[in-house]
Structure formats: structure tokens, C-alpha cells
Image (cartoon, rainbow, N blue to C red; front, side, top):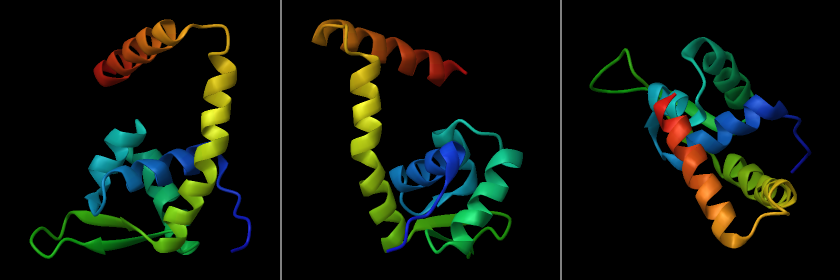
Length: 113
């Protein structure tokens, strides 16, 4: 597979779409913490690159369903180690308990945003 430049938001959108298989666009927005006007063009680019498919819901034609393709999953899997390395570097000076506490606090803050 050729290297694909996604940019930070593209990586977030692809990863968020992967986290909720066959999700709707609004679920992907929530998972990525992006608003719809930001996510829509990102999803279009991901679809053009063959990393996701977008289809209309058979029961609610207003709703778009997003599925990550095999190539999309491969990209997410390829990105995971570098994302983990960045996290490890950022949290290097913290103990395991401190890391856990910080991540819990960050999740709570993001959930309330």
C-alpha cells in the first residue's frame, strides 16, 4: 500500500470511524470530537482514498453510514505504534498511577466538552 498523508484531523477521523464500526456520521463526529462541518470534508477525502465507505441508511435516508475499509484498518494499525510512542514520550516523567489518573481526568474533560 502506498503512503497516504492524512494530516492530524484525518487520522483522528479515520481512527474515530474505526472505533464504531458501521457508524453514522454523527457518531464519528462525537468520537473524533469534531463538528460536522469539519468532519464532512475529511470523510470525503478518506472515502476518495478508499479508506472508508459512506452509504445512506436504508431506514433513514438523512443518515450516512460509515464503514472503514480493509485499507483503512491497515492505516489505523500502522499509525497505532507511533501514536503510542508519542503518548509514552509525553507521559515519560509520570508513574503508572499518575498516567492513569491523568488519562482518566482527560477523558472526563473531553466527555464534558
